[in-house]
Length: 540
Image (cartoon, rainbow, N blue to C red; front, top):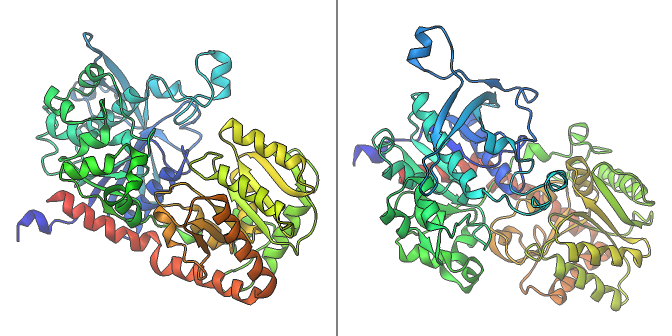
């Protein structure tokens, strides 16, 4: 066997725009942190992570310290240096940007926050905030940053330069999503890096391949200038007339996505049309996507630790001890009984105090991709059939037309529908704990973590059987339906309601089975082994 094939990844760098507990906007933050910690704590690896220091973050308050960087000329003078420069050329203009670094150990992982003016002026991870719009009208709240591509390249280049400064040669650089997917090509093609990183493998994880998630750029001349890549490499990364980071990674990294079924959909089904046919394009370039279903840390969502999670009472779905779950439901229904001033959340509508009625819950972005349009139509269908023996609680924000439609529905909800507009993590935990059934009507879903979280709280998912949601087993660990249509979702909800009325013991058994399956198959300690195998492939 080739000696390179026998190497095991020991030194790993994660490059990401998100990291749970520091900066996040979606599931990437959870995967990056939890996988990193599993590799450090259970895999015996030296794991490090690099992400931007955004303007909404206070590094010192978060426990980070400035990292002195080696600079022989200044060290001889007894003066430490804390910054370095990164080439960030524009077409026809040579430029550099200054970066400094903050460092902290978090649960076995060394985390680097890359501090630059470009990052510091952003108050949202990916989009402008209302406060930024108030300062400058062109920074429309909810719109993506105008310099998103430059932000991504600065992150990736700064991460590579930092490794050289620290004399740290990783076995693997794990690049999360399109925001970091140009790094493998730059690492292999740019002079000065390709020799230093000659024994470093690269892995790119596609967390979401949908249109709008590629981080592509149409200005090819700008892509050449800012990345420093040879024109031939940039041309090979063109997909649908744009320079696409995922297409650019082909040939330089092993690539995976976050569930086996999503990998199949992207490269072996018509579902790939939602990506602009990216999966089939990668297949033509010789890239077969590996499918590794995301894991979860069950202890992060253990309802036995009520105080830690902000719950009103402790309970244990794994053993069937659910008295505390009833308390959680009663307290939340009482709180939603009349409109009140929630922190970071605006209440529309209310819920009557009827704890014996089943409670459907939804937590997430209010978008068509998350199936909220189908959900609202399903609720209307059920009302039209006279099915009123349940309540629905929705937490989230998103597309304005869906928010407005939902507000209108709550006004006529008669105490059966409540919309909490916004998001607060502690409130989300209370809703997971109070709910009987958790609605996941996504149009497509690469993996999904909310089904895991709901199951750990004894809140059985009602999920569209697509992408990573196929891990919800119909009638065993939740309820699943095939067609992305209001009628199909309404039928699945009626199935859940029927069991709630006629066979509650079976629902308890399903809750126990769901938690057991997570512990058996979906902990990060287990999923980590699949990533170590992927890393071995990359190192070859």
